[in-house]
Image (cartoon, rainbow over all chains, first blue to last red; front, side):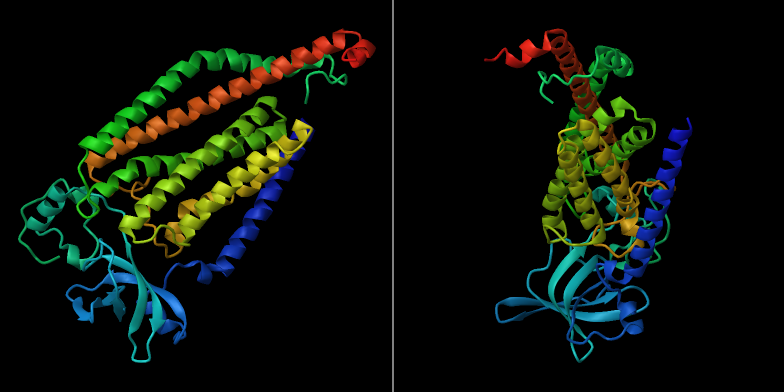
Amino acid sequence: MTRKRRRLVLLLVCGLGLGTAVALMLTAFSDNMVFFLAPSDLTTKSPRLGRTFRLGGLVEAGSVTRTHEGTRPVARFRVTDGAAAVTVSYAGLLPDLFREGQGVVALGVMQPDGTFRASEVLAKHDATYMPKEVVDALKKAGHWDPKQGSPPPASSWNTPAPKPATGG
Amino acid sequence: MDACTPLAPPAGSNLQRFANPGQFLRLSGRVLPFVAVLGLGLTLAGCVWGLFFSPADWQQGDAVRIMYVHVPAAWLASFGYLSLAVCSVLSLVWRHPLADLAAAEIGPVGAAFTGLCLATGSLWGKPMWGAWWVWDARLTSVLVLFFLYLGHVALVRAFDDPQRGYRAGAILALIGVVNLPIIKFSVDWWNTLHQPATITLTGAPTMDVGMLWPLLLCALGFFFGFTAIVIARTRAAVMERRIRGLLMARAQEADVPSALSVDA
């Protein structure tokens, strides 16, 4: 009985030590664990001119312009996290999920004029799944405009109360 | 390892050793058919419902149906590792012989579910995100889980003395447990490309009920399927050890010098 208890205590102490060590390590490296930086991070952190990094946020409603540079499609849009916004230019094909109000992660370099030149744009899907009919009902009821960002709480989906459209 | 080694333990300790596993064989033999049928039935029903009758997502379209395999596989990958860790504690602290066998059998099954999760996730990522693979915290931590499973599978079988293998495997499994909270909370602690959890304990799931039911059915089916495979494998391992024990006892009953020279 005492040997079992001793082994159990030893195991718990080892686990506690290991857990603390890993927690300290993760907090120390947490700056490097992020997959992308938000636009407001760029104002607080040192400007990374000439360094490749990932920029993530929502595509601002009404900011997308599509042009052509020779035969390649070029898109310019603003990526925002609510507090700050950065203009991104990208030459190439955008992923299918790209739209206004969608989360995106762009890999690229900050230009001297304050815009972000992306070499790759990934779409970031949010954690909501709904059929087209539900979205149409929400839009019709004025509960949600997909261009304005994330959808309303799920508890309101199945009760599309007739409310006057207020534009989100 | 081989049945004809003359250094077999006495039969008495074998009987004592398998007192508990014998009960496990009887009990699991009764439960296994039900668990297997439940696993197969629920998985089939959930997949048919999810793949053919559930609504498509408004922006992902039919690609969302990968979810009905990807998400249950991911849940079971984590759950499998948790059960591996519980077996390891039982093995290290209480020296439970059945836990050793179960841990050795959980490893390959968990690795298979993790591999399925990674493969389907990659197939889902390309059309939706635009990339097969990214090194964000969620994907990387699940890849680490996959390697932990593979390491456990290899380590348990790497020693001539199985007891030493079980001991080393249990220690590895318990060290790897720190990865589980990292997997779960990676999407909340850091910016990741992978979206945060849709189904949480605290809030309503942000998923339409027409997709939620087949998903939960698939998850239940995967759970029972995982359990059935592990039970069947552990039963086979128990019986294998029992046969080995019988062979050893018989080899010891025979005349030892003649057993050594009988092949000549």
